[in-house]
Amino acid sequence: GENVEQHPSTLSVQEGDSAVIKCTYSDSASNYFPWYKQELGKRPQLIIDIRSNVGEKKDQRIAVTLNKTAKHFSLHITETQPEDSAVYFCAASMGGGADGLTFGKGTHLIIQP
Amino acid sequence: NAGVTQTPKFQVLKTGQSMTLQCAQDMNHNSMYWYRQDPGMGLRLIYYSASEGTTDKGEVPNGYNVSRLNKREFSLRLESAAPSQTSVYFCASSARQGNGANVLTFGAGSRLTVL
Image (tube, rainbow over all chains, first blue to last red; front, top):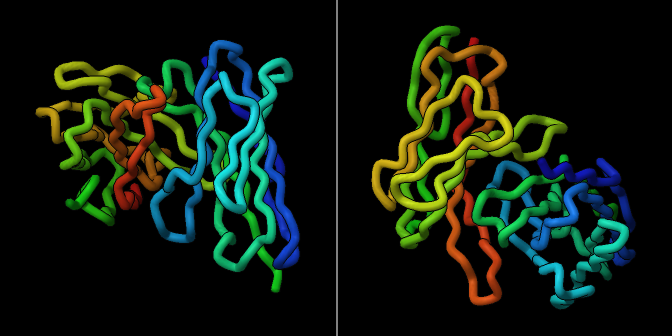
């Protein structure tokens, strides 16, 4: 089955700086790569996703890049703000995710004032 | 529009007891999922149901059973709870978007402790 590795497990950045979280996947058939944000005590929520036919996608301060050849994808957050503090999970799946997502173990992003 | 509702929010069990976690969605989604979340382990898929009447095992199905009661409801049962099943359980549902992706909507979670 699919295996998703996520790094780092904890990331601390100064408010206003950028943050980058990286994931690798094992199954070259995977074609859907979402990112979920989970605030403390809350449920995970989708923040951005990318399909395998696209190399980059942006939504305001967040962007995701995908390198299919190397089987890795990354989340970029620019101009970080206190409300960006959360745990971020990357995931991968085939078939758009209908049979469930395989998640990475998560990155705890801490925004230092 | 409540989205995905799961009950109970908290439960404490003794080893060997049984219980059922209930999940219901009101978004007319075809697919439903049960995940467990443990510290440092991310979210791991227990079972999923791609459509009413079908269920399939995920990554960690041992010790669990599921029932897709109808399109709205998907329950998770622990027949004989073990301390290793202490976890936070999330139910989710999804429907295919226009771009082909299945976006998961999660419930609020159920924290289960097995003593």
